[in-house]
Image 1 (cartoon, rainbow, N blue to C red):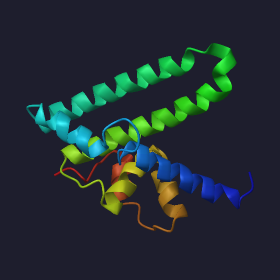
Image 2: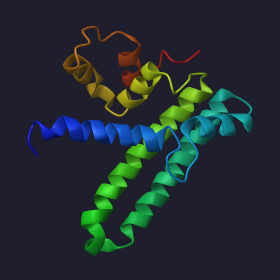
Image 3: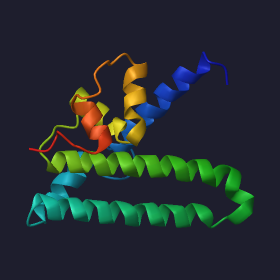
Image 4: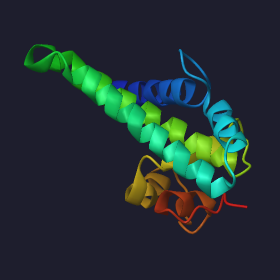
Length: 151
């Protein structure tokens, strides 16, 4: 892959994560619908978040099991599918939690914060590469786990 192809592929990958993880593209409900549904059947935000985490872990486990059924023969296809499925589950989980916390996941800064959670401790590097000088802002805090999105 050349350096000219890389940004396009990354952009396409990120777009797909947002479409399938947040925006209800495909067979599952959107992250916002997921978050609102779980919150409606919970006593508190914290209980809803625990349920969201548990359901996401269960979904990831089922996905990993399903993609592993073919064994060594299907590995060249199953591994990339499993990785993509993991990232979609993670984006959906974080988007649902943001919804429970009262944030609009259609808002570009919130969507960016959701994506930054995927890079974890490397958020400072990612922010620096895109020209964000300060790493003490809300997005950096989200990536570090500080979650200023909490009300």
